[in-house]
Amino acid sequence: MSDDPTQSREPAVIEGELVQPIPADYTEAGVPTLDFVRDRIERRAATADGATELAGEPTSIDEQIAERDRAAREKLEQIRRSVRGD
Picture 1: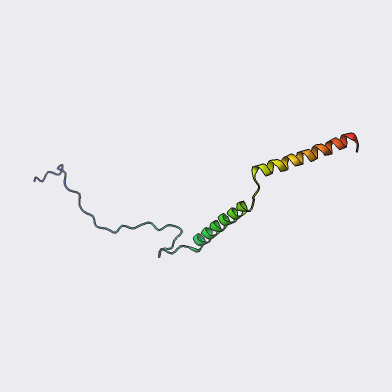
Picture 2 (picture 1 turned 90 degrees about the vertical axis):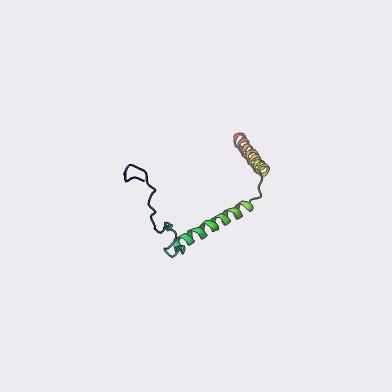
């Protein structure tokens, strides 16, 4: 091997410790912060409330159409009465 600096050499091995970045939601000890836990609980509660609300509405499209048609008939009858002077 020659002492020519243009010749490629094997890269030097650098020893070091790999450090993972700490997420903002955790302390340096790896414990979740109170804000993170609170947000997670509130998100789960909101999801559960929404699911409960949706499950509690058994109205189908057919029921909604029937209700709209009934309201339209009542309004039409009210208009007819007002035109006739009843």
